[in-house]
Length: 322
Image 1: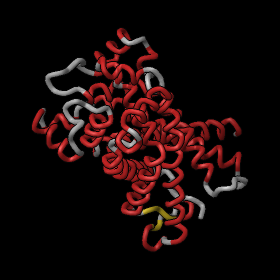
Image 2 (image 1 turned 30 degrees about the vertical axis):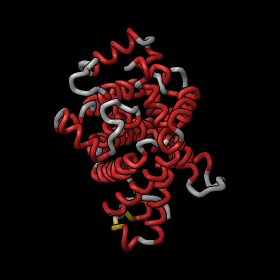
Image 3 (image 1 turned 180 degrees about the horizontal axis):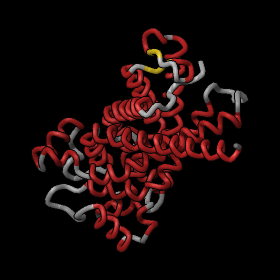
């Protein structure tokens, strides 16, 4: 009887992980596709593309369509989809696993309510980015190309070229350290803020923000507008803390595309120092921040909302103890 119970539990665990992987992967693809044009102009502005550095967000988007084509707004999105499904699937699933075991291990002994969600979110982000980082480098290279000046013909060609000409696997992980350092506050605050706001909505405003779902913990589920609101706020907070390291990562990833930008491939602290010395804080470390808010808020909102909607469709629990 014990073996049957163990087998059943094992089957449930595999099913739980498989459903979370699917929901997380699809959520990531939906969120990134929704903001792909903003992602591309952000990369072009962050790395001071000679064709776009004098433009703003909306004038830059208009210029992309005029200079290249409408579909150029989505340049690099194919590589993004290849990267984002395993990334988002791993991140959301790792968060669920870490949250489950951290909750049991730490109990209520933490000084900040729901602090285990921050730790679980940070750990999930680090796990996901470690496994998928080379694909992010490839996607950035493809998105940075301008029509008529192509160096790369696709995902595989980009990977092989970087690997052969720039130093092997290390080149594909260029910019990984600032990404890892930025991921801790970004993923940590994203998950912490979303879970905390979700808790506040369920506890203090269930009549406005929730609907009943008896099989859920707490018997409630957030309605879609509340999901979007919680996710959008979480994205804004997370990006505010991690953005300078995101700029540093991009400059390092794109350093070897032009001889004049090769100086940005010398290491994280050196790159941070150069960006600060040449352009300062607002025009350097926080360059493109306005567009980042425009993309981060809907991106995180769509990501968390899609994830929770899919979890509910797959009959997974999205509730919490209130």
